[in-house]
Each structure stands twice: as structure tokens, then as C-alpha cells.
Length: 306
Image 1 (cartoon, rainbow, N blue to C red):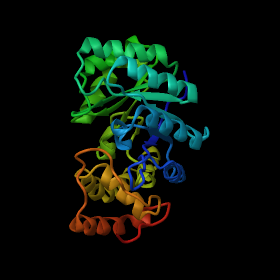
Image 2: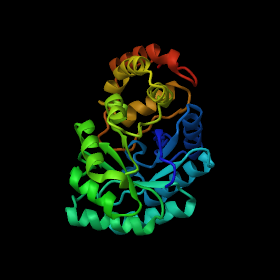
Image 3: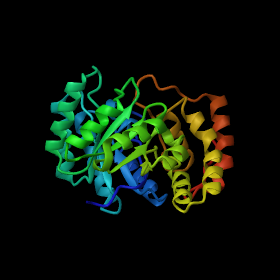
């Protein structure tokens, strides 16, 4: 059995220039920043990467850049979610060709698939990618929540479906249930939802978490404390980070990019994803106060004022 994927697998955002084109140089900076902050793995393009607003060619190019920049230093999990089995398989084959260590896929999105269609979808991915596969179990509008029974059956029945990213609510109870049902065929479960429930997930046996990358250095410090058995420090760090995670829940990728701009990683915070709220002057002031409190914990450049 291969070594378990474990730790903070961070998601680089996809930077765009002011005209809305993918900024490849900025993406390379984001990946370099994420690695310098201590991420144990990389995951892209997925929800925090605005994957659904990218063209197929852009998704493939983002995947290529992330693999290139990682250069084998940490595992890379490539997002291959598709609107159909055929599309997801194309992305899985590309991920295999560029040397991805693993892939992650939501069930088919846009139109909700039946359990039988979902099973066939993951079976096709299992045939297309001879390496670890994550099922991403998350809420609508993009996600299709899967039952613990279906998740466990997919893990038991398919050779390469070995991991789950769990971000339905409440995630902790789902982690407990699916681990019980899947047994040793399940290599591990990672949490999502920006790491808001990481302490509970860890106690229930989660092997990691997959947050966006803007404060991955703090997520890594929480993880390090948990692995060291220092629950007092882990809880103190997590409590200190929570105001930012709650703030970001209102704005999603727009907030991630603004934090990265303030940390000197991005120049442009253009967001493609339709319906994403933008920060007004009051939001910017609140974000500044939150980041001033967090600044002593950053391992990379401290934020600058708005």
C-alpha cells in the first residue's frame, strides 16, 4: 500500500488579468507561495480555482502549470470533475499524461445524476486513471451530496477510488460513518469547508484538509499542532483563524484573492465566477482588522493596507 496522503492539501486560486484572461505568471507565484507556506500537497483546478468558469483548454493548462511548479516536491491532485462521464475521463487522461499524483472529482454537475449514473461515472474514472482518486462530496449548487452507503460502496468496489473529500453538513458525522462502512479499502478522508471543522474532523480520523491557499501557513501550523498532540495550541490557532474563515464564507474566491493581494502575491483580484459578491469599503476595513490580528502567524509576507 502506498503511503497515505496526509496534511494540508491547499488549493491555489486561478489568477486572471484585468481583462479576465488566465495570468500564468501569477499562477506560478501563487503555487510558489503555497509551497513556501508549507503545504503538504496541491489541489487544482477545483471550486476555489473557479474551475467551472475555465475553458477545457484553460483547465488543462492550469493543471500543467501546477504540476510543473510542484516539480515532485509535494503530491498534486488534479481536479477532473465533468458535466458528463466522457468529459471527466478526458480530464483524467490528461492528468495521467502530465504526471498528476491523484485526481479528484465531483459527481457530474449542472444536471444531477442518479446513483446508478454516479457509480458508472466513478467506475469510468477508475479505469482511466491508475492512481488514487478522491470523491468530492459537497453541497449544491455544484455538488451532489452522496450518502455514506454509496460512498463506501464506491470505495470498496473500485480499485483506485481510495479517498474522500467530505464537505457536506455536518462533515464530522459523515466522516465517522463512511469510515465505519468503507473499512480498510478507504485510505483516508480529508475535510473541506475552508478548514472550519478541522479539529472535529481530525479527532474523527481525517487524514487532512483541503482549504484555499491564502492562509495555508496558518492551516499548516494548526495541523502541525494536531499531529504533535498539542490540542491547546491547535485550538488557540484555530480560534484565532475563525473570524477570517467566517468572513470569507460571505465572499468565497473574491476574499481569497483579496487576501493574496494584501500578502503581495497577486496584483489583480479579478473573479470570473458569476454571482460572486464583491467587498465594499466596510468589508475591506473589517478584513484589514482581521489580517492585522493574524499577521504575526504568517510565514510569508505580511499583509499591507487596502
